[in-house]
Length: 284
Image (tube, rainbow, N blue to C red; front, side):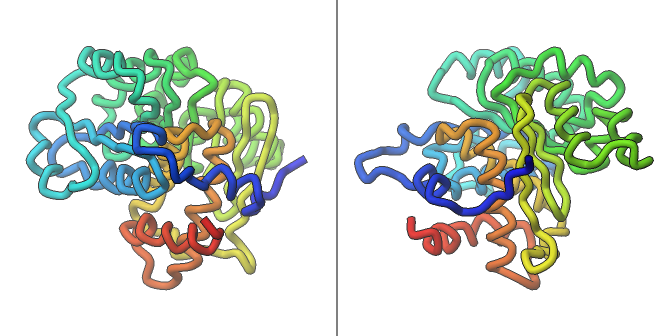
């Protein structure tokens, strides 16, 4: 049975913050960035992670891209990340509890960094380049994945990782919910398939849908960087301690609701800035 995501009391309670808590109570999210000229997607995601309530967010960028990112970041922190060995060192700090890899990362950097990130056994969102980098050998990615991961493909990325399921979808041999359910079982982690009606499936078969069509339509989400913001929201929720399936479901709803509230003219930069209004409307 497909659960339809709604802002119920459980979601409100999970999103609320205790007045006695401090920033270290809400996790430290790491967003890996690509080289010079490619950092915009990671910065969008990092801003979203911070807006959704992660206590601290750090962008990890190559040395050659530090100046560019430093010129754009203020509340989001910035550190150099030259190689995968260094990432393993960073992950010795257990307070850094959630990662996002993919937006603007670059395929070669993704192939290097994803195994190191997954070695750390942290809650991890993989999007964009972190998925496409393994299109030639999806099993190489699946062998590293663990239950605290969330994959956030659009239909093209889904087809690169799960070509047989995508073909079954194309021919009508499998309905969309069943294809996503099988993908999550194969990957051993939560899979969120983006679309007007986003589907989220856990490896145990739990499935939810976030409708953004009909009277809930959010057509202005069809803009560059929107998916990067969604990935950042989910990463921020993971940092706050949300379970992977719950983070994906809550993130999908917040993402679409922010777009609905903003309305026509939306660009990706607007989405994180609309989250405070969404929270106020939820009574947080």
